[in-house]
Image 1 (tube, helix red, strand yellow):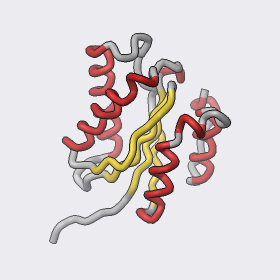
Image 2 (cartoon, rainbow, N blue to C red):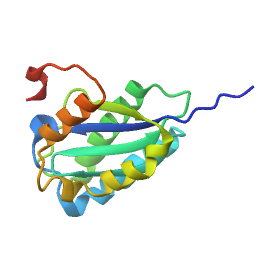
Image 3 (cartoon, rainbow, N blue to C red):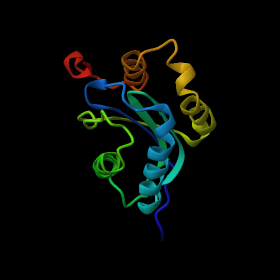
Image 4 (cartoon, rainbow, N blue to C red):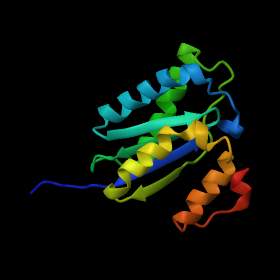
Length: 148
């Protein structure tokens, strides 16, 4: 018997100190690189997008991949890529930690659209407001001091 799963993860993390340094016309290069990481890990990427201070990734994890290892690999490899390519000159790293939220596959299209429209979404809502809403929606308890 094989292993079958269908769990969607929305992974969210920001730049260190939420610095607004992800230059819009360089993001696609970063997104393409992260898509390659996910493909190499046998994960299916549905959507990736972000704004100047954070990213959203909607993916299905291969059953052999631990979420924490995947996020660590994305952060380490993309940090090296960003620094080598110099695409975000003021980039000093990613925040410690991340948010990861699971969804049923029937929410996939809604989530893809939500992530595609991050620029529009953040015209009216800050990262902090969005992140707290995600934590609350998913019943995740958190400490305010870690949301700075």
